[in-house]
Length: 253
Image: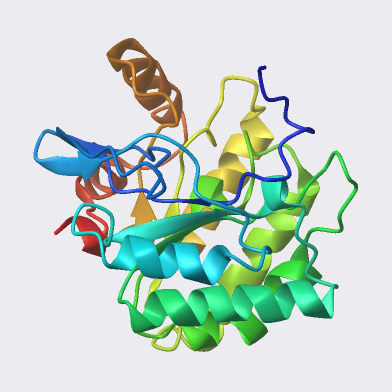
């Protein structure tokens, strides 16, 4: 049965360590079946692990951390998990997940955008909660913000509000936020207006070109080319494009 955007509350933790030249691509992974493969020297698997809000999440992370093919990191999808930053229990569980990843030295890739289908609040206030309550418990591992804190494109004003919270935190204390990275997979879609492209380029510069990772959700070569072509339409300089295209996430080095 196909999974719809609004019908996947059990999807939560996924590892992300696949890459191609000039592009970091996030691949869904699982440690429950542990069917490891090698793609250009990078270990990947297929499947879904668990919802980070479930009781068994920490057990699954521990199991992944002890598998040499899966111990590099994990991905957390807050939208599919229907997580709510205003739910104290959810925040506590996310803190435990981040602390566990930090203890196992597992990099974290997080889909921050909460469920639009369930109308879960999202924006500046929620990103601020993430920065003040969750990020600090994982100071020793990279934390990669998937899709530039959104889900697809950059037309959603709530996403820009969330990104603004990250900009403010970095401007206030860049050293304290040194472990934060931002991927731009599925962000520069073809439906962006000139104004939104300018805003997106501004936010990328404010976050720091050196923190931005180019990526695509689509593993097919044609899709990668199309996504890169779309990204190149942003009003960035050639030097900025070159920097982003060669940035490498710490867990890939």
